[in-house]
Image (cartoon, rainbow, N blue to C red; front, top):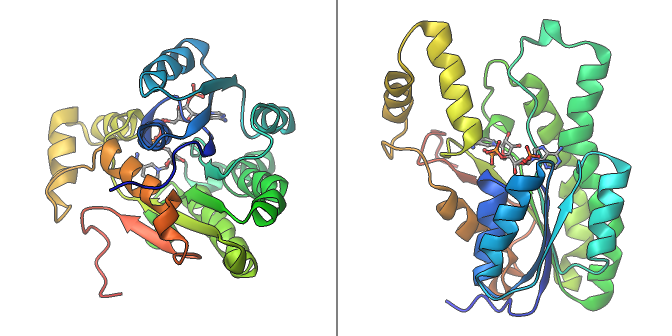
Length: 258
Ligand SMILES: NC(=O)c1ccc[n+]([C@@H]2O[C@H](COP(=O)([O-])OP(=O)(O)OC[C@H]3O[C@@H](n4cnc5c(N)ncnc54)[C@H](OP(=O)(O)O)[C@@H]3O)[C@@H](O)[C@H]2O)c1
């Protein structure tokens, strides 16, 4: 399918690895010029080189997206984006009793305040140009609590509710705001979580991974490509009537009829 995105400009935050990179790759394959981002220079440069092979322009912004300066750099690299994919690292697994005030504020800044600030900066331009696609990478933990990720879940649920009303105010201008909720996708973050879980239960990481896969109706982890392609569709010219939605992609792990 032609996604109708040839020549569109996209900012994909936190995209040197994992799900953000997969979104950037799918958008590059659809013909979008990209601004990508991460904090490790070597990884970011390698990803930029890989994406350029799709024949699009790629600008790499080495910065922490959670900081005002990082956001300024991203917007300077692409002042009039057609597409914004909000992504960031998630807070580490931690019992909520161990979170002090600063840790809580940092988590809320990462997973709620930062995407809102970026949306504020780009949304009026999208409205004026009559095209905009905003996708926020959140988590199935918004619906289904995951032990130790309460801060992440709370901040992302806050983001979801914050944007639900705003999405409806710009729908008539062909600007959409949607969230994609990943279940278990095979990225560095997932593999780190598996190692952490395996150590805690005293089993081999492969056994822990098998156990987790067996709990998923699809019997496997998702591939980043599957995630990136779903994101590219939500950004496509065909998706202007889909807004304010939460798309769970988890191989059926969240068991509900609706
Ligand atoms: N994978 C899953 O199964 C899963 C499930 C549910 C939710 N999620 C959520 O989806 C998001 C992406 O997960 P992932 O699995 O793709 O993680 P990942 O494999 O750890 O990749 C994270 C990416 O974000 C970049 N990054 C992290 N913090 C950043 C910051 N402050 N500023 C700029 N770049 C930053 C990393 O690069 P640098 O480290 O070099 O900055 C890397 O490119 C996370 O918020 C995660 O909690 C993932």
